[in-house]
Image (cartoon, rainbow, N blue to C red; front, side, top):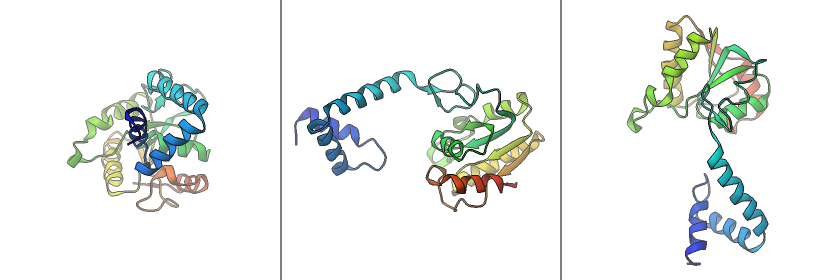
Amino acid sequence: MYGKIIDQLIDALRVLPGVGAKTAQRMALQLLERDKDGAARLAEAIVEAVEKVGRCRVCRTLTENDLCEICSNSRRNNAQICVVENPADLYAIEQAGSFQGKYFVLLGHLSPIDGIGPEQLGIDQLIERLISDQVSELILATNLTVEGEATAHFIADKAKALGVSVSRIAYGVPMGGELEYVDGGTLNMALQSRKAL
């Protein structure tokens, strides 16, 4: 409609969550008409991030280094691991500010219908950490959805077999809710009020 290059930009912007055709069109036109410098900075930042950001070899969150800042922080509690579904959930808990342990990012949840099993979630890697880091408590902070609950129970069974204490975030997070959209106070309450499985 606008020409090949502008149409490609609009289409590329639609990969962002919640961005439909009209929003992508407004974004593209804003960048091209009113903020070409901002568009250039955005393009450079995206290219650099795509080239330099990978996964932490221990917890699997996004990082620019071999180890993320949390895994490389010796002041964090190695004996306590919080399991989350994605990096956005990890950042939400970190912003709440009360958790001082370490993390493991599943990068999803169990979903046999979509072909996502324990192997795709790195559960074997998590089990190795439970053993090698002498973890005493595993906090399951998967989303409170049917899939998140199934994933939490699967992991809890594995951890309990190793003698690891398992708890689940509870109060304050609504059923069907996703952690990245929950405020810090609610997350703090959920972490403090966790219950054993």
